[in-house]
Image 1 (cartoon, rainbow, N blue to C red):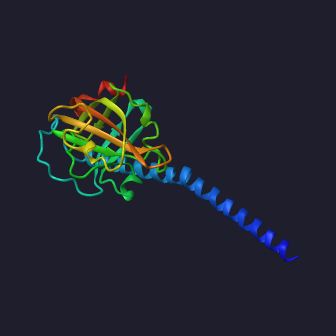
Image 2: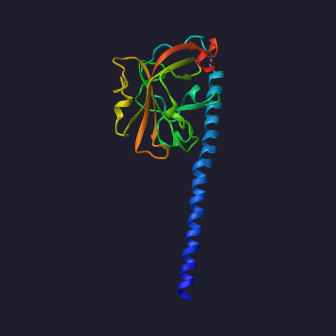
Image 3: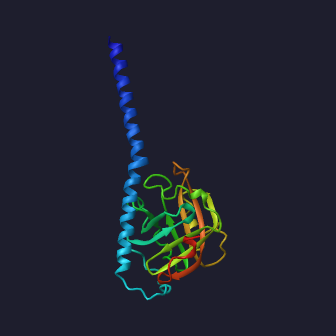
Length: 225
């Protein structure tokens, strides 16, 4: 009788543990995505309202000093046509969990958008909306388009995805090592975790600024091709 009770108790514990595991997986796969997409959409709406209330001169802003963005501040909206016509995510300052749960994160101390240097951005591969789920599909020549409400910035992928380890911080240097760039320029670095459901490594893609146009001239062709 005692043995039966022990077996029954163990069985109940296994069933309970299995149910909790299923709920946790559902949370990771679904609920974090729902929350991230809602938060990302809200941040984009906030940015667009701010831009609409700020007069634009019709020309891109000149090169700026490297004044840091405020932590958590919305910087821009990013579009990657390779990931789909409806793919758009806000870029926020910082790369901590609270930021990456709402969108993409700009590495502090890297260049401002459009400036000389390296504008470096991180994003989740899986969970929290899966913004960089299709990162391995990036190819040289692909467009990555950003807007800060004043101008459109079209970058073109030069190299990637390149696999490295998390301690390889040189990938976000002003002239990133292993990128193929040989001197100062206006660069973009994208980073995400690898493997798809792990974080032992990083995938990196590097791009250069190919074109800039004022928002008053309309969307860049790269978004409609």
